[in-house]
Image (tube, rainbow, N blue to C red):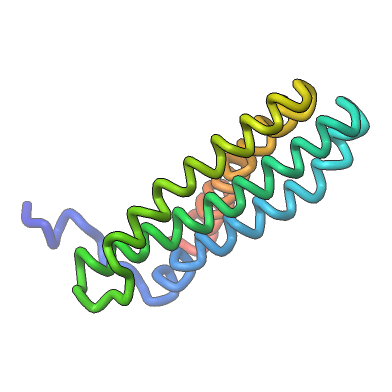
Length: 145
């Protein structure tokens, strides 16, 4: 069995559909953050809701930087035509974690309830990815991708 036989050909429609995955994940992340912030506030209190919103904001920024970093790194590896400098890609990678650490420390020192909400907010990309996985599975069964 050759490699060509092992990988089924993809249609242009399927490639276009899967190329929009990151955009859909970001959209689901933002929507779930906006919808769940009031719920967190009602169930756990206003401090937890503020922490949740901060965690959602940091996770959105973190995910955006991750997506850009992966695109830049892939462009440098594959095409050599990337405008991204290797140092800038690595600096953004380190800054992502520094941002999360600094904000988490500041919130932790201020309020445990807000810190708990912040940790929940950091999980929003997982909700976005799970939603995207379900949507892609639905599309695969419905459209035959």
